[in-house]
Length: 310
Ligand SMILES: NC(=O)c1ccc[n+]([C@@H]2O[C@H](COP(=O)([O-])OP(=O)(O)OC[C@H]3O[C@@H](n4cnc5c(N)ncnc54)[C@H](OP(=O)(O)O)[C@@H]3O)[C@@H](O)[C@H]2O)c1
Image (cartoon, rainbow, N blue to C red):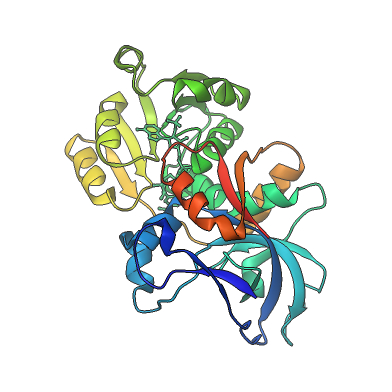
């Protein structure tokens, strides 16, 4: 099978299409023919040698990125009863998704409901679980609260906007003007250009900041919270700095690292099936063009999700 491999940390050209044999199947695993793999900022940061992702795999090179896939089960291990050959499945992996075929623990994957397209199933796992955990487990968002979401048009952000509306919150979405109509279509209550100082200055304070940009952006948004406001900062590289500044300003603040939760993924897939949650897929690249996909994610201005397709 063909897969994209990095042999060393570096730029997008480190991603090289390579032919390898498929790993043997353990009794609790399934082998999946990958239809689509999600491309996430963490993949590009890890490839570049940055953050927790690079730290975790630095002794495992050559390495294949890819933390979420959608595909068709080809074969199941001897103890697997929840999936069968031919099932459409999706979910989070520890890596290896940028491939024609991947072997994964059966219990990490869910069957994709009939009403959910392959593309939406491929794009919902990582960003959807992150958005849900950020708003609920970490942000404790309540109905009638006001939540400020930065990078609202991105992979995590556009799902967070919809999930926050579903909770009953009032959503203030920060994005470039070319994404404003898109975000109004997702029912954001207020849409603000984050580069427009006058619009930012006129903002009423929020209960919760869902920070999806980190660093200077997050620090600048702390003043837009109520005195007892809460901050969830999602980019891990600047989390310590943002949490410290928020706490110094008297706010409650936390960083986070998403964890796999198939019950939550099941809720997200149901919401997609019932058309209560839309997964925007803006770019689909053939597997061989993984480097182009990484260059796109590294622009920092992708709307919704990027996928690789076999
Ligand atoms: N801790 C975790 O478990 C976890 C999980 C998932 C993601 N993450 C991290 O969370 C961050 C967001 O992930 P993602 O997948 O949503 O990223 P993404 O899809 O690449 O985000 C792209 C969006 O960022 C917006 N943006 C760029 N600069 C901005 C700024 N200064 N202010 C407001 N918006 C800005 C862009 O909006 P415009 O084009 O409108 O400018 C674009 O729509 C990444 O750092 C990622 O690594 C962490």
